[in-house]
Length: 487
Image (cartoon, rainbow, N blue to C red):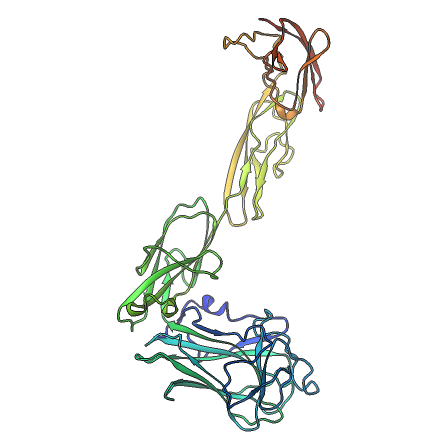
C-alpha cells in the first residue's frame, strides 16, 4: 500500500540543515506513502538521567558525557572525548536543545537498545525511523546496526541493517528506517537494535528521535491547485468555495474518514464537524493560514486517534485586504492647495497610488497636496504583495472663498438656530473665537466644525452683536466680522 505522495509535502520536514549538525535522510526503506502523526516518539528528553530503553543485561548507564566501552549516557552535549577522537556534538538532531543517547560499543557485538511498544494499532502499516550519528572523527571501526521489529514471542516482523556507517568531518545525523505491518491479533511489538561490529577504536554512535508513524496512501487533491501544488493563496474578500478530493489505497475493510484543520501550521489538528467523506467543501473564512488534511482509520479503531493515517496537507492562505482610508471629503479655497489625508495600513508591503493624477503633488504618497481648479474626485488604491486590493475615495470641493453668516436665531424653532460656517474644512486647523461686547470670549473652537448655539457655559446669551475672529495656521487670510444674535 505504498504510493508516492506530494513530493514537496514529504521532503520539507526532513531536509533540515542546522549550523552545528548536518542531517541526511536514507529514504530507500522509509514510507513513501502518507504518514500519520507519531504514535511513539522517543526523544530522550533533556538529558540528566539514565534511559529505561536499554536492557539491564546489555550496556551500563554512566553520567559521563564521554562513556567508555560498553557504557551509554543521555546527554545534550559531548566534546573533547578521548583526545578529540570523537566529534564534538553540541546538540541533538533537531538542534533545539534536547538530549540524545550516546553509546560506546562493547567489544563484542550484541544488543544495545531494546524496548516494548504497545501503543500501535492492529493490522496497520507503520514507518519506524531513527536518527544515528557516527561519533568517530577519523577512520576506525564503523558502526553497523540492525534494527529489528519483533513480536513478544521473538517472531521477526521486519529488519533493516544500516551497513557500515561512514565517518564525516562534521557531525552528520542520518535517518534510517523501514516500514512493517503489525499483527492482526496483538499489535504489541519489541524494538531491538543490535551492534554488528566489535568495539575498540571506533563503533561509537549517537542516537536520537525514534519514531513510529502509521503509513499508507492517502492523497488529497484539488483542481484549483494544479499538479504537484499544495498551497492556495487568496484574499479575504474571495467568497469562492473549494472542493478537496481524497483517494486512499486498497486494504481498508471499513474505513472511517475525518477531515481536519490546523491554524498553527500543523502543530494542532482539529476534526471538522460533519466532514467525514472523501470530499470536503471548504467555505470562505476570515484571514489566516488554514491547513487541511484527511485522516483515515478502520471503523474498529475510529475512537483511537493514534490509529489514524493522515494525507498530505492542503494549505489555504487567506490574506487580509489593506486598510485604505482616503481621508474623507475636503473643501479647498480656490487658489490654495489642500492636503489629502490618506491612510494605508497593511503588514504585507502594500503599493498604493492616487488616481487621477491631475493636480496632485505625488500620487505615490498617502498625503499629497491637491490643487484642482474645479471639483475633483480622487481615489486611493492599494495592493499588497499577496495581490489583495482595496480603495477609498475623497471628493475635493473647490470654493471661491469662505462665507461667514452674519446672523442667527437660537429660538429652537428649527430654523437657523445655530451659527455655523459652511465649507470651513476642520482639517485646515482654523481657530474660531467669538466675543461679546465686553470682550469676553463666549465661544471658541480649533480644527473642528463651527457650531455655536448662542450659549456660554450653558446660559443663553442676550441678543446683540458679537465679534468673531477666524485665524488660519497656513497662508489663508484671517477673517474678522460681526454676527448678530437675534432672539
